[in-house]
Length: 198
Picture (cartoon, rainbow, N blue to C red):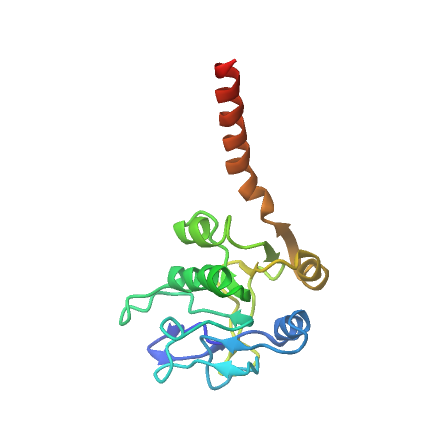
């Protein structure tokens, strides 16, 4: 998968490390249907791979059952897109098509895109122990470590399976609790209305 980074004006395709690809394949029973931001060096082996310039993963359909996303981490000034667009597509595909989606992204819990498209939308996140995850560069080991912590996010319903596979890679946190404050606030408001009517 391509993280779409440009370093010193030389295009380099940053790919998912092999140990995570193996875990992703295991999670999806060996079959990844879509990789929407792939590259010629990808080792993911999805059934369908979108690669620029022919196929744009932010424009083409995500109507697939099992999707793996390693999106560009920086801004694409030419297209006016960033990671928030990819996280939006993850949340939208899960809601619209019932897709199961795994995404390897930088940890940025204070950003609007995490608050809108991860919290309250995704089921679970694994905050990876690899604090400087080493991506494959043009399909080979030896790249520099990422400058930020990374996480594997899951939009889907199979929390137990995700936990059993990804807990060896980091701290697994179920995000269901983030939906409860809204329900609790509604319940409290309803109780107050009932009390006032008595």
